[in-house]
Image (cartoon, rainbow, N blue to C red):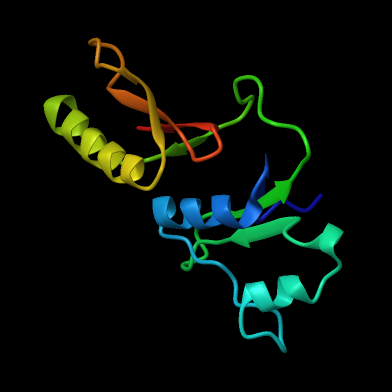
Length: 144
């Protein structure tokens, strides 16, 4: 049996392009160019029937190392805690006060982009600090 080489993470949301652009800022990802024959994604959207506009939007790691993220519009709002969430590895290799300061600085950057702070888990001798945020549609993710 062949092994899987790539993974795409699909996230249900209300506004796919807006959420994709937020995550591009968080992760340093890029959006794909608009389809051939269109100068912008907006031009492409206007060429589609109203019900088909803005159903999906993707972004990807420009290095190809990280997974592609696909955002798909769904009619229902988020109502409960995520069953799956992204961990943004901002403090890898850091410990103690240096780790917490790095995570807090990154949290401040992401809050300026529209994220909201959920809670901070402080180092307890067994686990290092971690900060849980919510993206612009309320999906939880961790800075660790």
